[in-house]
Image (cartoon, rainbow, N blue to C red; front, side, top):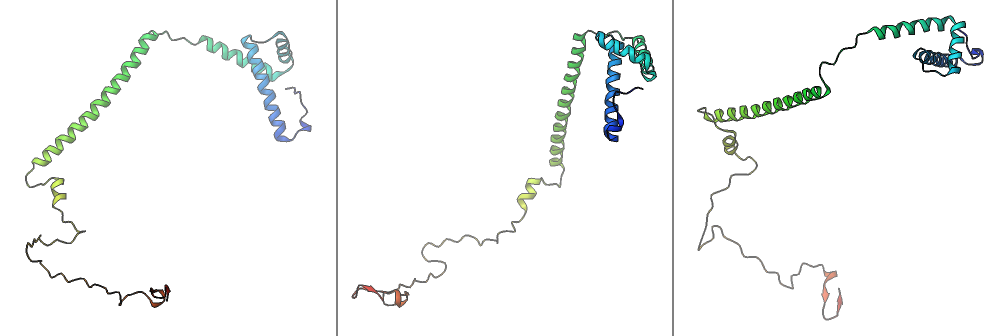
Length: 183
C-alpha cells in the first residue's frame, strides 16, 4: 500500500495513529465510491488507487461482495400497520398495569385476612394488648393517691425566717446606712 507520509519523521505511536487515520480515510472514500456518493475528483482518486494499490483492490472486492449480499437479503414484509403495532404496545402496557394493581390488591387483602384470623385464634393476644400489658420499667411504681382534707399526711415544717442582723452577706459587701458606703 502506498502511503502519503514519511514514517521516519514520526515516533512509533504517532506513525501508527497517522497510518490508522489514513486507512480510515481511504476506507470511507472507497465506501462512498461503492455507494456512488463521491465527487468527480474523488472518483478519479479512487480509480487511481484501485489501479495501483493491491490492498485497495481487495478492500473494493470485499465491499462489493458485502453490498451484493445485503441486497440479496429478503426484506420482511410488514405483518401489521403502524397503527396496529401501536395498539398492541398500548394494550400490553395496560395489561402490565392491571397485573400490578391485582398483585398489590391481592397482597393487601391477604394481609387483612391473616390479621383477622390471627385475632380469632384462642389463647393469643393481639400485639396492641401485649404492648399495653408490658410493665413500664422507666418509672417507679407510684403509691396510691391519698387525699387529706383536714390534716396533712406528713408534718410540714415551718420555713425559717431570716433576720436582718443574721445576714448571710459577707461583711465587705454589707451596706452601712449610717456612713452611706460599703464596708
